[in-house]
Length: 233
Image (cartoon, rainbow, N blue to C red; front, side, top):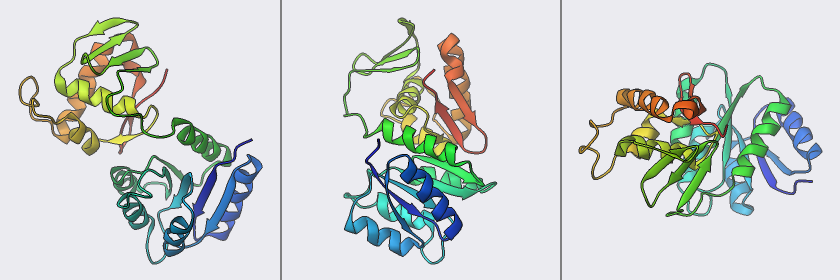
């Protein structure tokens, strides 16, 4: 059984009770609060292992809660799953750029939410800097050698493409916005073999990455209106 502590933040009592019931049924310890202010206070009292955070809150809204938590050293590593109304793509993008781990749209299936919670907790803490080798599905990344392989066959990538692939591989299954990928692709040698990377050219880099990865290219998925993710397949 699970023992992680999850903080659930939502101003709708029915949703709080639904999420609380389903998480407890899976063995999680749960704290429920209805406002952003209470969420910040609860986090200061006891750091949760994960936060399920509604974005549409009275007073301090979910995005501001996310911003404040990610701005504090003590809480910035807590993964946050956003609950958001369908169609609020701007809020989803803003939340992901602030550092949220994932999002679930309302109305939602409790089984889907539980699956997302498990996936985020399973991914755990950020791997240490300088990790030599990372494997995601059929792709192997050798950071020190600046080399990517598919089924142990080296793939020739530009510096920008390699940085984007490494960034996606840090959190398989997580959705990253184009702006996050722009930031990841920049570097001291960004102008040597790549055009200056912009949100528009990220799409070009992704197309090129998919082509160069060949049989593993389909693992880079487009999340419409948000960005991209690398699936562990």
